[in-house]
Length: 276
Ligand SMILES: [Zn+2]
Image (cartoon, rainbow, N blue to C red; front, top):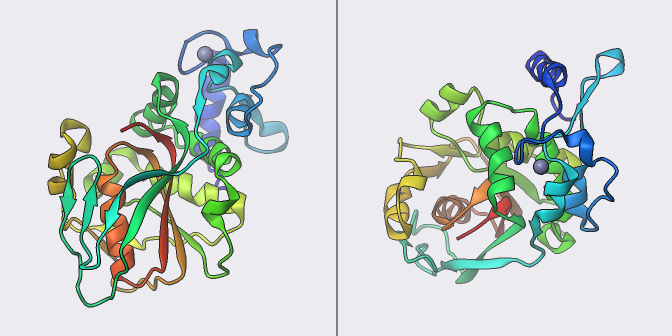
């Protein structure tokens, strides 16, 4: 069940009262409602209005107009971002290398793949930045719906023990925003695809610099040793790791290493947007 709190409704109502403007182009979304929705399922999911609340309290907003949704770039194939090595380390195609998290759990050599719904462009960035920096948590279920529609079934294939976890945020980011946007997307995504969401599996063990300030190799160094599986968490089977945006993949790879070291059999990285 997607969480819909008072904060969501107040924010959605405020948007409704001041107008229904596209987060990307700034034009009134209703001016484009007569356009045919995009043929791609994920882009079409973002072209559908976001309904908040229930009954007479329900309001609809349109975070991206249909014209902008037509310009989104859906991605349907997994992208190889690096390799997990037998010693528990990982090398990334972006140039970084992550040291082993643990040498106690045997790890098979395998590719690290990310399954994005879209290539990140300025339209997607506009809505993800609104989610992250303008605290519009209500955008998370709407993005999660597109991720659920866009993700190939192969990314969730046959494992009754499959679970969904989120890329963690450090305590300062969570305090500043009031939520972890990856967790909000992951929780709603899990509800859409009917796979259990495991809360609090991954934790940040120390603060890191914002990855956006760093290049590929620096990002890997910045995140090395900063992510762990919580002591009380139990991980097994296939894990779908959810993040909002992936660039070099250093953070997602650090999460994957921690999950493999804790016993995950297979880790797939699902994200709304990807751009190396
Ligand atoms: Zn627009």
